[in-house]
Amino acid sequence: MDWSTKWHRLRWGWYISKQGPATHWYARNYDECDDIFPTDGTKHMFKFGNEWALQEMHKRHFQHPRLLTHDNWHFVDNPEIPHLLWPSHANPKGKKSWVRCVRGGLFTHTHGSGTDRVNRLLRRESSNRVTHWRDLVDVDKPRQLKNKHVLITPVTAPNYTHYYDTTQSEWLREVIKDLTTMGFTYDIRQKPSREGRIGNQLVEVLSTGRYCATVSQHSVAAVETLLAGIPAVTTGPNSCLGLDTPMHQFMQGELKQAHETDVEQLVDSLLHNCLHKSELAEGLWTE
Image (cartoon, rainbow, N blue to C red; front, side, top):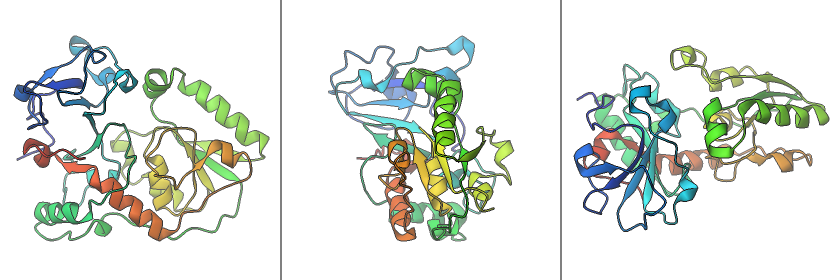
């Protein structure tokens, strides 16, 4: 089965379980929920992607998760280990067959372990040609930092508007001002399309040794940066589980380089919240 298709008949936005418990990920089991504020957690909910990505005829208004007063919900979106969507023996056509599935948040915020489960799925999907996530994901040793040149990696503009009540241009202005104050030069990498990332993945760009760090917010770019052995400076929510350098610490002269063992443990935790869509069809949700 092609798990990247709309077999579930769900659209971007919020859903609430018809019966109450978390169950199989199909439209027949969940109703669209266009007012999440009154919900009390007695029924399982999930947010699927972002509402602004819908076509005009299906538009739904954006609802920020902070409106919720409970954590009986999951965020389902692209995985925090993007390598699972890249072409490989386990995903020959690079289809969107994997998702992040985080309970009570947009990003993984607790430690866990997903290696054994994901490895079993990779073996299944590749007919044993991929036996471990390390076959897909390189974890580089910390690189020697030789310059003061930074790569700024903003997320797409609507994320700033809807999640943080600002704009991408305003965020960039503040980041550039801080970098300039500290004597750093910079390049800006806008998020490429999926097609534009072929042969141009962030980890490949960072492997050139041109940059001493990246700056991001609300982006798995920070995780890719750590995988490349380079410090990740962040200005807000992220998936690094403390291996990043918050901007205010960076402004005080700190720049954290994560040890490769710690980055491997980070990948293990992120895989805990990474599901193959066949698992959602079977009713599996992360805790």
